[in-house]
Length: 474
Ligand SMILES: Cc1cc2nc3c(=O)[nH]c(=O)nc-3n(C[C@H](O)[C@H](O)[C@H](O)COP(=O)(O)OP(=O)(O)OC[C@H]3O[C@@H](n4cnc5c(N)ncnc54)[C@H](O)[C@@H]3O)c2cc1C
Image (cartoon, rainbow, N blue to C red):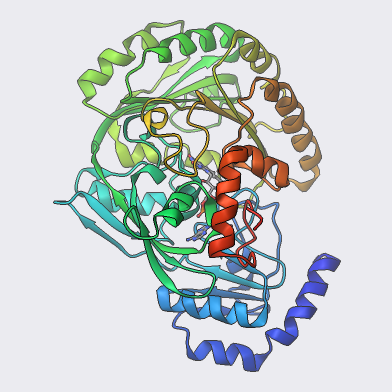
C-alpha cells in the first residue's frame, strides 16, 4: 500500500516527470532509467532496511560522472526531490524517496589500485567486500566497516568505523581526495589542496554537499592473513566478562580492534549446536599486525574465564570482513539507537548485563564498537567527524522478520537506549542515526562543528537540494 502522502507526491511529480521529460533525460543518459511499472522497479527501490517502503517516481542508475551531472541538472530544473544511493544500507532509508528522483550510483563499481603508491581510486557504487577483494589482491586494505555489503560511499562520508580503525584511522581519515558533482551539476575534486573546506566537510558530514562519484583512499599493508575471529562467553557471566574486557583493552595496542556483541548466539554452522540460541557475549577481534604478535597480545583474553567457543585464529582478512554478514541480511525490519560513551563504567556494564538480552526477537542485539587508538589520535578539528574522545559507540539494534514484531522490537531498543544514554558523551555517530530529527543531527556534530557545516552548506548547497540525509540545514 502506498501511503497517501506518497501518492500525492507521485501525482505532483507526474507532471514534472512525464514521458517527454524522461525521453529528454534518456538522450543524455547512458545508464538505466527505471519507472513505476518497470519489471526492475521494486528491486531498484528496495534498500537494506526492509521497514523502508518508498516509491520514487524515477530511479536513474548512473554509469559515471556524466550521468550523475545529467540527473542532478534534470532534478534541479524540475525542482524534484532527490535521494542519493551508494550501497543502500543506511538504516534511515535516505537512499530512496517517495516521488522524486533516486540518483543511484550502484552500477559505478570501477576501481584502480596503484600498489606502488599504495592508493586506490574507487567509484561510489562499490561495497566494502568488492573494494577489499581488489586491494587484498595486493595485500593492501583501507579501513572499512564490519559488514561486507555496506556501501563504501555512505560509510566513508559519515566517518567509517571498522576492524582497522584503531591502527589506521577511520575510512574518512584515509581519503586523499574525492570527486564531487555539486548541487549545480558541476564537477570538482576536493582534497587538502583543492576545495579544502569542502574536503573537511565530506569527511564526516555525510551526503550534504554533493554527489561523490569516487574516492581516492590511502592503503596499508594488511594480511592477507590476520589473527581475527570471535569468542563467546555465556551471558550469565556478562558482568565479569565485560569488566575484564574493559580493563584488557585499556592497554591494548592500536593494532588490536575489538567489537563486543550482546545477543542470542545465531545458528551459524561454525558454532557448536549446543551454543545456538544461548544468550552470549561475543568478543570479536582483529589484529592488524603479525599473527605471532597478535597471539601474544590476545593471550590474556583467551585465558580469561571459560569461553563457550574461541574462534580467534589466523584467517584471511576478506573472510573476517564478512564474518558478521549473516547477522545483517537485506530486507528484514531494522530500528537502531546509538550513543558514544567515554568508557564502559561499572554502572553501564550493569545496565547492559540486566537488559541487553531482554530482546523481542533473537536476531536483535547490542553492539559495542571499540574506538580510541588511531581514531582518537587524529586532530579532532581536522574533519567534520565527531567524536574522537569516545571510547565506544554503543548501538542497540532491533531486528524483525514479521511486521507484527516491529512495535515490541522498537520498544526494546528505545527502553535500553533511554537507560544507556545517561552514560553518553552527548554525541552520536551520524551513520548510526535513524530518522531522529534535527536535535540528534546537532548532537552528532556538536554546536561548533554543526555551525561550520552550516556555513559550508550555505556555500555549496544553499537551496538544500541534497536534503535526504542527516540534514545540515543551510
Ligand atoms: C548492516 C550494517 C552494518 C554497518 N556497519 C558499519 C560499520 O561497521 N561501520 C560504520 O561506520 N558504519 C556502519 N554502518 C552504517 C553505514 O556507515 C551507513 O549506513 C552508511 O550510510 C551506509 O552507506 P551506503 O552507501 O551503503 O548507504 P546509502 O543508504 O546508499 O546512503 C546513505 C546516505 O549517504 C549519502 N550518500 C551515499 N552515497 C553517496 C555519494 N556517493 N555521494 C553523496 N552522498 C552519498 C546519502 O545522503 C544517502 O542517503 C552499517 C550499516 C549497516 C546497515
